[in-house]
Length: 119
Image 1 (tube, rainbow, N blue to C red):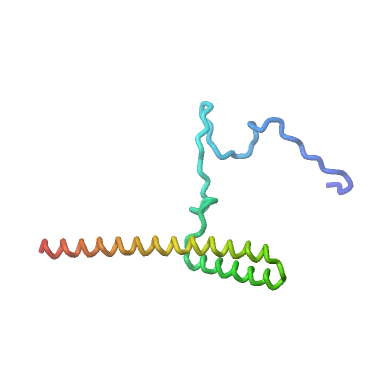
Image 2: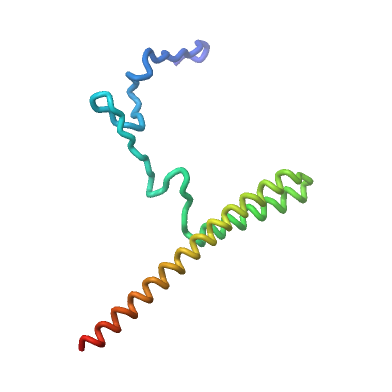
């Protein structure tokens, strides 16, 4: 390829005839939306592993300390808001796990009680 020549890209003639895959499947003029989820994660969903969430919270708290030490109060508040957001997600995950565990425990107790009464 010659380096002295400006490389020009060919413009697309029609956006509907593009070879790129779109986010919907067309059949008879109807577009059915296909939800792209990579590895079980969507754009609005974050990783629900509590250990990862704790690391993310610590990361943002450390970044907030660094921003405050450099004198940037706005960036400090921004990082604190990020850490607060992920701490709320962590508390939801923990409460959901506790709720699921308590439901499983009550189901196990009920099953053992029915097994004992049937014998």
